[in-house]
Image 1 (cartoon, rainbow, N blue to C red):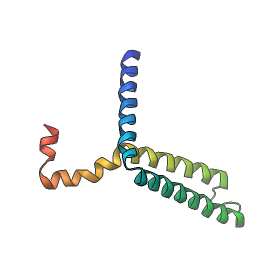
Image 2: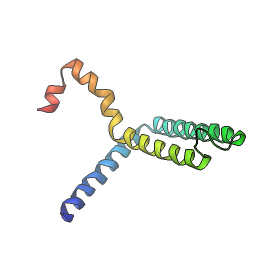
Image 3: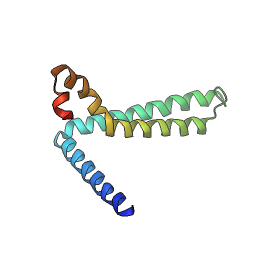
Image 4: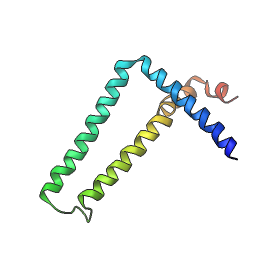
Amino acid sequence: MQKKILQYARVFRTQLKNNFVREAVYRTNLFTMVFTDLVWIAVEFSLFGVIYANTPTLAGWTQPQIYFFLGIFFASDAIFTTLFQRNFWNFSDLVNKGELDILLT
């Protein structure tokens, strides 16, 4: 069982490496995406910082609780984006062009 898990971990690591190499080919796009994501995260945290500077709780949520929630949200969004988003964008094109059957068989 442990040997199988290590085998899958190596495959996953190789896939991550290949994905990074593919994205690194278009460096400007990669840096732009990272920059915009960081700005978006900073804006979200700043917005709630301003809100909580004027009130101790918001619907029963304290500032640390909201920051924890935002952290979990952004982490799960990053995982989803990394693993699935590109495929979801291409799925409708594959269906419309009739290439999904070829891909599945």
